Amino acid sequence: MIHWREGTVIRVTRERPGARELVVSVTDRDGGTVHGASGEGAKGEVPPVEVAALALTEIVGAPEPGEVVLLNVGALRKGLGTGGQALVVALRDRLPADPVGPGHIVKARYTPLQTMVCALEEQESPHRKAMASLPGLRDGDLGGMPVVVAELHSALPAILAGIYQARPDARVGYVMTDSAALPMAHSRLVADLVAAGWLATTISAGQAFGGEHEAITLHSALLAARHVLGCDIVVVAQGPGNAGSATAWGHSGISAGDALNAVHTLRGRAVAALRVSGADPRERHRGLSHHAGTTLGRVVLGAADVVTVEPTEEVTRAVLASLTELAQVAAGDLTVVRVAPEGLVEALESSPVRLSTMGRGLDDDPAAFLVGAAAGRHAAGLAS
Image (cartoon, rainbow, N blue to C red):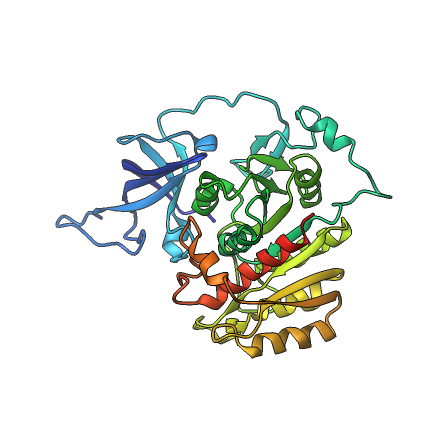
């Protein structure tokens, strides 16, 4: 449930389309903790603490210094890593202006902060005619467009690095699923990649919202990317905030298998960007992550290319052996693709954003990023 607090905005620290990052002074209640801080003043009062906070400006408005805001601090109190911020739920003393424009598709449905968007498919959309004219059940497809699917949001820039090294002129779109963060504005990564010109367009699918375009389903998002928005290649991944439980089936990244199935259903070229690590302190994620074993082995039912790097010091032969064994027993038709490692590090070093996964950078865990770049390079070779 929600841990409510009230705070005063001290300053704005960063802004991007749809989001404003803040420092907020919060006086906790009942001697609890906010962001690991607590204590009593000389007269038994709980002193205020400063916490980082995020306001989704298209939903709650744009808080200014000095304003009082209502906060959800649950993630901070639980010590969850992703974001590391309180979330602004409302401005206490003023309401933002009503939105203007078309759209009647509701996302984050039946939550108190449900938001209304104009989806690509709906009647009010300027793209409605194009979406309605797409082929249907018998012959609708992606025309062989390659789609790279990753479990982790952090794989996005590595995949793009591999694509652009092989095909600098590619038009690449990003589809964010609703398995993790719902608001795309929560992602600094996407905002910076758009600003750098590494993403030509973005689509938020399902309950996710806030992309340049909105789609009701992942399938519609993929078809729109190909036939309406003119993408050569698409990358699909959940937003930041992967949820896990150290169990085979209880992790949000399993939706990558559903995405690969969607690509197969729509007759695209499904390319899996693997979750690999040479430095994760958790044994279950060393080498080929156990998540990949479940997702690729049991969830994927169609054809997909699973891409790794020719064995190197960073990406060991054990990864290739695991993939080869997995492909033999998988429910779907998995093809193991081995990409030469030459030039991949240089491609990754050209990224306009910092590479980071679970707090580890390229120097700390090169394997995690090399396989993403390899998947991107392979996809670039498949694009027409």
